[in-house]
Length: 124
Image (cartoon, rainbow, N blue to C red; front, side, top):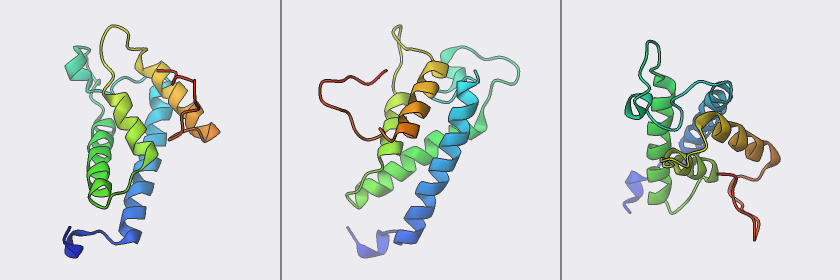
């Protein structure tokens, strides 16, 4: 990788902090029943008046960008990785966004993000 392409550590830290702050705000809102954090509401067919959630869309985009930047520097952000993994869950056995948001908030509060104890399965 060209050294000129690398972000300054302070810039990367600020980007990760902005992601974390926006994620926490969105998770809190999603846990209170707002849909569209983990996937675009329009894609789910749940479109209705006021259903667009631009902050959630930007958060997913920021997460993808942050993950790509970190990958170039051979680094990872467990919070970002786990959020993007949750965004990829779809199908009949999907536990629902509200439940995912609550479980993810609990894992963050316990400090369990990025770690999976042996023999235990994630709640999603």
